[in-house]
Length: 301
Image (cartoon, rainbow, N blue to C red; front, side, top):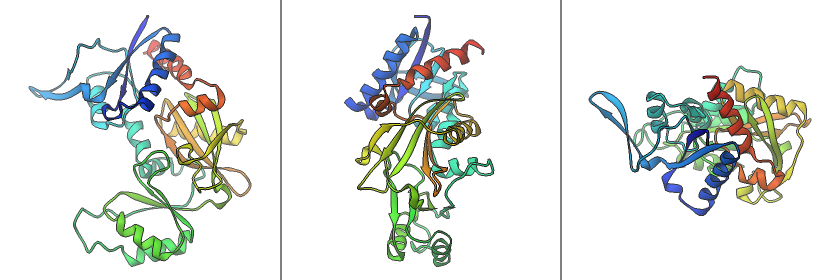
């Protein structure tokens, strides 16, 4: 093998589902003449020693030429970058995509159509009355109407996303999440139970699928949705590529909604979108494109 790299995954996810995903990456890397070492984040011990950043490891590891960082351990990612390692995606990209509030703030003013979005006020845990601000509740009702969508800032697979139908549900969810970062969005009725997942590597759309559900407003496969191969039009492709560029990501999985005239509306951006469902749906090995991209990038460093 000519190139040696690490794939960092979360040590708490040593389950068959996630280890199969890691092996998919390892197999794709091998085809690209890359020796990819699977390393759990809990095998790497970030340390400050004599005032300097150092790294201790649970087992002997060769120094990698690149790191495919498929975890969300932002502090570890920052530590590795401090030590001079090149991460795909970078710590900043992972952080900005993992936090849905940051994602929308960064993409604002870039000409990308997004749902009208309000961010929750920050309350420190245990402070205040535990009751939502009634003026803010009234503003949400006036500006977003019902139904509206509430999303926790951190969540995956469509979890931590709620469809709110009335004031009673809104206030109850506000109380529940009062110390949890979250956002409020208008509900895109025209995209109920359907969206498009587009995979972008560099500045190229490499795969896409149409996801739909007859039983849930969310189209996520993990919530019972189904997927079909899909060829997005130019508007969908360009929005996905533009969002990737604005976020300065190396690769993304972009979820786009359908507007009233089937125009694309950005829903979410994933910095480490899972690749098995798209492979099962389309036969496209996204990992192959990722490793080709990584090899080109490190060759020009």
